[in-house]
Length: 62
Image (cartoon, rainbow, N blue to C red; front, side, top):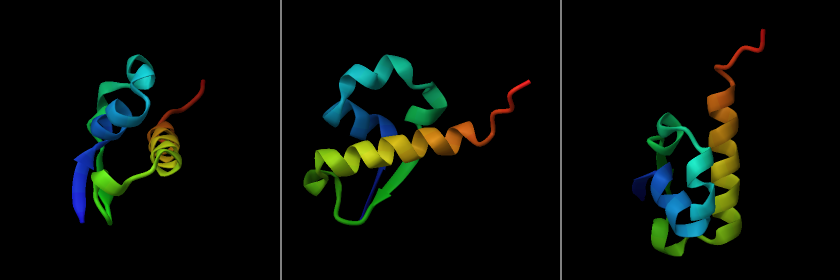
């Protein structure tokens, strides 16, 4: 198991998304069962999407 920040995943797999993510999103801790070295791009995108959705749960539209 390896714990990394979402920043590390985004930076490795899709750095073009960095300007669009909030600092608190990028600081999210992600636990990877098999570590960052074995993470595939499809899995990375799924983690990024899930993390964004989780942070939007606290947002209220007025």
